[in-house]
Picture 1 (cartoon, rainbow, N blue to C red):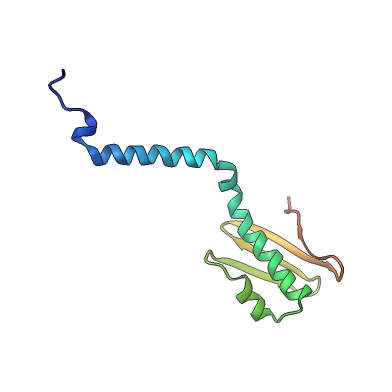
Picture 2 (picture 1 turned 180 degrees about the vertical axis):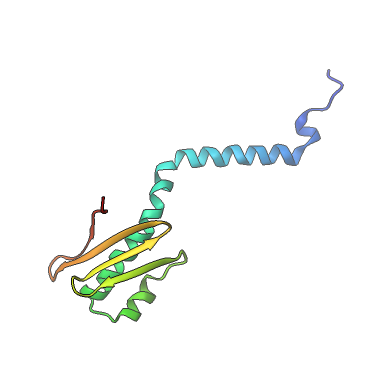
Length: 112
């Protein structure tokens, strides 16, 4: 038997922290695709929902801004002439545009 106590016995909190860090890294690795897509979801949701609130439901701009307000900050810009909404959040930008009475609003593909 060794005369030196094990690392886990000498540093139980450090060992636990390492174990938690390894588990966190494993979870991040498993969910990496979903975590990478998350920032785009914030701006896309804001643009699409604001567009629908304004042009499909015909609500005032103030009501729609309160409707799409989220815990994570995002900015909105509205082009009244072509009924286009651009939302920016978490470093990503998404645009939605009103297509017509029967089609409603649609997210537009990102600009190159």
